[in-house]
Image 1 (cartoon, rainbow over the protein chains, first blue to last red):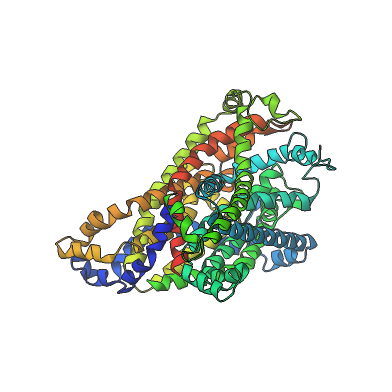
Image 2 (image 1 turned 90 degrees about the vertical axis):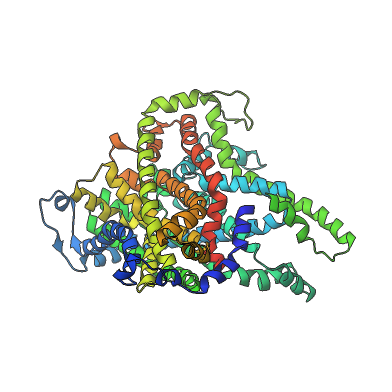
Length: 331
Length: 295
């Protein structure tokens, strides 16, 4: 982590340097390119990137919207029939369905739980890293980076094994506690308990990024400020609440918004954990949309659900973008 | 971890009396124990994967599991290799991930240069667009992407998967490379141009060497993301053309899951990735957070 700390510590001077004059290098650059006018070069450089994004992201996005206003099923997929415009039919059907609303509620509770756990545990571990000896810090860092780098699909397989009904090590360990008998306990018999296990899996994979980012941020908190607050009689909580937290706020906002977006989009964890066919009690918006499209073969209904998911996230995305743009303005 | 040892004395306030420092040492024991608990909890799943992979399959389903290995065996790995073709999916994942990274870095580099080194009209809109694209949940796009590739005849083709992966690797690459470029002072290029370099020459001789470590880190990170992707690999490829992540599902059949070989397969898939990750993680953490800390 030392590299991260030193690099980030170098940032403020670098920012000052770059902020002296945006685009001076470009406008003062002589040569044949100058003839094309100041605007041509950057657009030429951007062209391939924008082309790919517009073709493979922009068009499907447009298609997603148009699909959700059409009737598109198996026969349209095979080309036997042309897609028909049906207006808001898909949306009235989806939004009028009680199952849909229970899925929305479940997704929000699941994502909120995962985000709060991730942020709180991440913050606590980041603070703990400041207190422990060097070798403990090194050990924790290795464990965190290993779990961060784990492919989600592998992590899911491991958790499935640890929480297995018959041979899972967790049931064995819990049963060793006095008065607890969990041998043969099926963690996935009920939706809430199964989703709690999946929340743990998501949190386990998400905490390292939060810890590493917050740790880098914590090194930026001036020691003098903490010292001053302590002299003024602030306790450990007071220093954290009134000194550390305000300084870390931009990072926390960014991490929280990112976590919300990621956790609302959880798919493989649920899908693989439930063997490719999640039960009704396990359906989140993502798996529900997938099921509607590829199992029920109602592609337009699935698109409508996906679109509603994206709309639900827009508020969070707006907060994230504002934070990132503040950074963009600096240069 | 050199800085951690250096930072340790700094946490003890310089003017604090001796006895206070002694008290600090004692309380540090408690923190260290708590730290070890965090280490064990965070590391246990990975440890359990290795532990299960390396012990005989019948020990893995022992009702009294051994927490420390007694007998080592590679049988699970042998079983994992024969349960269904291993090298085919791995090879395909390799082709897809490498191609995505090469195209992503080349195209992304140009775009990153444009938004970090040039002031032009619409720059802000481009930045917003690239950030926004990153925010669209991939799962939401699976239906139209599936239909698009179906129409283009790219369903069940590696090329189709590569194009699809580019859409999430590219915005990330552009944004991260931008972070690295911004931290290279413009004066260096300007000095080179004063000395007679063309803008292209200045970039190749001055900026590029400084940028190389960041580019390596970004490519490795992009490679890992492409390698780990599951949903699109599952949806867009048939059984015969499956990639490594989907291959891992072969251990679960109607008759149950063969956990010990599955853990061996998981180890083979994850170990190279985790090692790559350990190598680039420091650089990436710096790159990813650069933006946030600056704000």
